[in-house]
Length: 167
Image 1 (cartoon, rainbow, N blue to C red):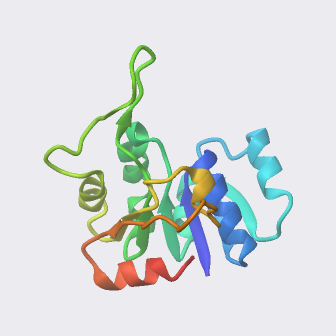
Image 2: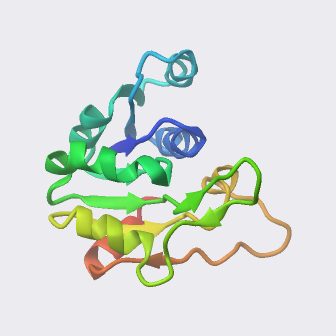
């Protein structure tokens, strides 16, 4: 199984490391695949690769969207053909960051971010999940007491079942 992660920030690197550690081949897709932190990230495992966003989308049997919400539509428009027919796990949060104020939801009052991503990727099966915890808790989480419930939604039952089996 190959997993293409569209994004190269903390969330993408955490998920990519987690999947590589259990034997999946992973490619992070970045606007700048030659960043020093990405060279460092992939040097310790034969299962980790770094490429462009388009290369990562094409690489994966499964794709993960792990980018900042404000750039997601531009990125999706560039990788849409490579994601056709694939399951796309969307871990984005539609948050606007303002230097002078607390972060706020930018959408989600009449339509959800997952619905917007699904509309943008009409030929893919979008599953929205993992976006309720920090990237530090997405892989092998440790909490005092019980593990939290991880919500998952999408409009394709088979895609949701398959997505839950990857971890």
